[in-house]
Image (tube, rainbow, N blue to C red; front, side, top):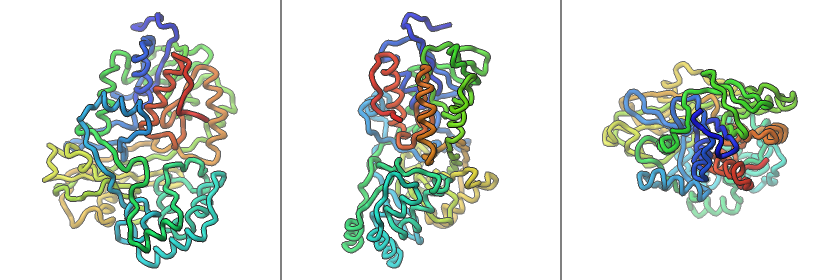
Length: 453
């Protein structure tokens, strides 16, 4: 083995996404040499990776923007990317009633047809007020009233989550959903004022070249001597503390940091109590088809991204990807090309036909007012992301309280977007922070600052 035991505790990290790379980089920074990282894919990035299609267009695995709640992530981004990023102010809209409503929808009702705007404001005034103990369906109506719920919140969230709102909790909301006071909404409506600055991502950065995945490609290069790509984990022995890999190799560990989906992790455990397996079976997620459409027409659209609650598009969001960086189109030539990256969710509650989706998406971009006329389609590229959103169901927290303490008592830390299975801490910066924190916990016994049950 290429690693020695001179550092004492042997740490195995599974997954070279933001969390796993954040953990590995922190281990290296602390001088802990006795670790290895196993990644089943051929390269780093995980859900934050990017691809270049055969026509030369760059696509992310979903609508990522880079913003941060944590100094550790800010420093990492600066050290890895330097000034090779573009800085943007968010310009985002909701498509409703054949018009563009500035995001957040509930803050900018003046852009709606008068009757719809009236319904939304009356609903806000009459709303009793939401409680985190409510399921998401009840919470939406109690917080926003019938108008906003029916015109935006309910249809949009079903398109995103592909899960009935009655199955979802509401305690994940926090900064994810703008909760507006009816007085503020009424003022904006009567005085014709826009209210667009809400949220932590109202400014963001984006890599100049290579998409979001460029961040993690460079991180992977920093750490490549300790990373084994193309080695999937096929089994974990909790008692003997061993990871079995697809190539037949066995990796022993004192501590295991796993960023794979938590339900998959539990399924790989050789010996595990039945209540832990049952709890893992309660975890729900959706999948997303990312369909990128590139057009041979100049970039003129100034929007950052757009939301689509109505049924004339299969996708819930479209990102103006050539605006993020001109190098997301061939040769950086935005005088010739533009590109839109869309996301369409699926689940057992919301099946989505894979066949012909590229054509339906392209039609939706025109029906949704994103693209005018019939510009030539230069590319249509699809990526299937089977684990896209960890759904915050009403049974999620109970399941996590069963699974995570049992794992941690055995030196296994499941962290990251799907490792923690908590959407409210599932951004890239959250995932990197969780990786850094768990490295500090294992090596220096410093309490984790972000992750909690």
